[in-house]
Every structure is written in structure tokens, then in C-alpha cells.
Length: 499
Image (cartoon, one colour):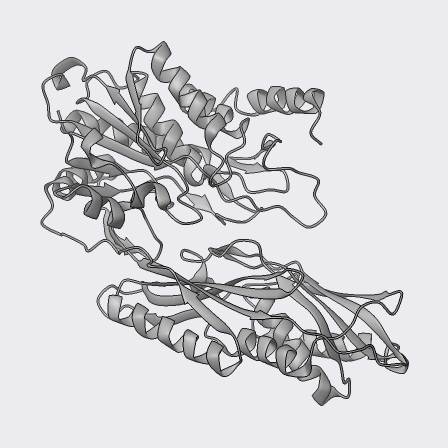
């Protein structure tokens, strides 16, 4: 992919896919976002689109030093003199694709496909997280609602890889103190709190032994896991490819297959549950014939751990040619595999105050390999600051025991629920009238930018909601088109109520 003709064909196809979807303006903006590359840190093309749209409409548009955009939309109708409302979303997307897919996220458009009432991408993440939030905000700016307060459309950058946009937001550009975050993924649910998070990076310098005569190199590839968002999907007992493959390698010697590790890597995003992992090992040549049977038995046992959440993962074996693939020093290999297998990954504790809500979790997200360094990145989350500190300390201790050095970022704060919030009260009334029942009010086990924004702009009164999005951060990501129409309508009712 990558030619101008290919890109034009995809853009034309995308326009056709969304041509009958309602509300038309929302989907037109979303298709325009899908047509433009927007990996975290590379949002310039979508920023150019937003800036051009603002200029065409005569709106003032500002960019702070870090690169966030703030578009000022005057109030309309009875909302002209009302207090401003901030509509907030992020411009970047998680870039994941299935193995073997030819797609360059830095150049190629996302290819949209519609199945019933759900919109997907072809073999890649869709970017509904958070392209739908941006598109809803821009449609509001287009005047689809008639009456609304002055709007400040806040579009942040780099939400998915470090939240540097929110962390460095210049709050002086914002006059409003009422904020609607449109980065939630379950229609009809109002979010009033979120988890904080921190990344922990463990690494070790690599050293090698000589190749033993009579051995051959074998590549093991674990594929077919579902992956998903490391916050929202962590409760679903999905398999972690890195942890599962490390378990296989640790157990193989007990099954009669002595091995030497040459290479081990997996995952692609710290905040996505890894779907794939690969290892290269050296084994005695005479063991190759027995290896498939032994691995099949191991895989059968592993699948019993995920009977309800994973159905199609598999392990592929490939014998490699040549004697130029040396094994790692045994202490380095054992330390790396032990760290990956022994660290807590998945749900650590559940909330005691909100039923069904994960309090603390950890995602063993990425193992990367360079010429002389292996790096293991974990993404930990908790709504309890003390629990997050404890978990990160435990991970660091395990890493040190396994011979890895550790560094940790400062993390980002959670968002403490305020059940007496005026924004919550008004939004509950609007949703109750729409559904004929009280909406669910809860917190989310994910790192919404609200916690950071509340620190950067003191006094913010915030609420978060959005349409039904499934399997965010994975190539299975989809959004319910009917749900987008519902949220679009709810947002209009809420903005009129805030006039």
C-alpha cells in the first residue's frame, strides 16, 4: 500500500461506507479523520484538517506550546450569553494491525467497513477511540444543535502513549469550567472518575554464548489472541501473549526439551493487551520432530485458562537455517523469562466501593529487542494511589531479583468522583428524560484525561460519556453506529440544558 492511487481509492471507499450513516456531519468528520494518519505524536495532518475547518467557519483556533488545539465556537440562540462549555477529545489513535497486514499508519488511510450497525476497519484499529469524540465535537461546532453555549473544543495530542498533551496543557486558553469528555465507550453510562496510571520500564544489557554444535534455531510464534484495551478489557481474562509464551518456554525443559533462548519479543503498545509474541530458541536437532506434539499439549493446557475469553490462539513452529543465531547467556535468559512470567498481569484487585469495577491492574505490554538491550514495559493502573505505588514497587522488586534495571515515569493522576457535581446533576436529568430511567453513574478503569485536566485547570466540573465502542486498541475495534446517533442527540439535549 502507499501509492497515491491506493490512498484515493480508500478515501472514496470510506466516503461510500459512511454515506448513509446518520448524523451525516459526524460521520463526514470521522471519515476525514480516518483518511489522515494520526499515530500518537504524529497528529499534524489531522490538526491541519481541524485548523482549516475552524478557519472556514470563522472560529478562533489556538495551539498551545505542546500542540493541543483549542477552537472557540460562539454560543448560538439562547446560549449566546451562557457560561462556556468545553468539549474534549484526543486527536491520536492506537495503531494496531493483524500480523502480515500491509498497512503503514504513518501514511495510509484507515479502511472502513460496515457490518450491520457496527463500523470496523479492515485488519487494523478503527480509531473510534477517540475519533468519534472529535467528530461529535466538530459537528456541535457546525451548529447542528441550534441553541448551545459558547463552546471551547479542546483536542489534545498524544493521549495514547503518554498523555503529554493533557499533562502540558496551557489552561490559560480555556475560559470554561464545565467540561464534557467524549472519550468513554459505553452508551448510557456517565463516568465521574477514572484510574491513574504509571509505566514501568525494565531493561537488561544482552550478552551471548557460542552456538553449541548439534543444535538448531527454531522460531515460536504465538498468535491469534484477542488483545484489547489494557484498562477497559483487563477484566475479561484475555490472554497475554508475552506471559503465555514465557510460560511455555519456562515449562519446556520440564517436558524434556532443553533450550537456549536467543530472542524474545512481543506486544506493540504499553496500553494494549499483547496479542502476539515470538521467541527464537536453540534446541538439539533430534528434538525437532517431537516438539510439535509437546507444544500442542502445552497449548491445550493454556487454553483451559481462557476457555471463555480466547478461542483461536495458536503456536507456530519454524525451523531456521544457519548457525549464526547465538543463544543468550543463561542468567540473562532465565531472568528475562522469569520476570515476564512472574509479574502480576491482569486484574490485581477489585474496587470495594463500586461493584464490578477494577481497582488495580497491570498489563505486561511490550518486550522490545535492540542489538544489545532488551526492554520490558508494563502499564499499571489504579484508582487508589497507595495501591498503585505498592504494585509498581513490587514489579520493581521482581525486576531487580531477575537482574533487570528499572525506571518509572511520574504517571498521571486519577479523577476523584464528585457526586455533588452540578454537571453530573444536569446530565443525569437529561439522560433520565431520554431513557425514561436513571442512568448508571460510575468510574472507569482507564486513564481518561479528566484527572490530568482537573489539575491543569483548577475548578473544572467534569462529566464523561460516549457511544458503544468494543475492542478498542485492537484490530477488532468497532463502534455501534446507532449508538453514535444516540450520543449525538444526547449531547444536543445537554448543551441546550446548559444554556
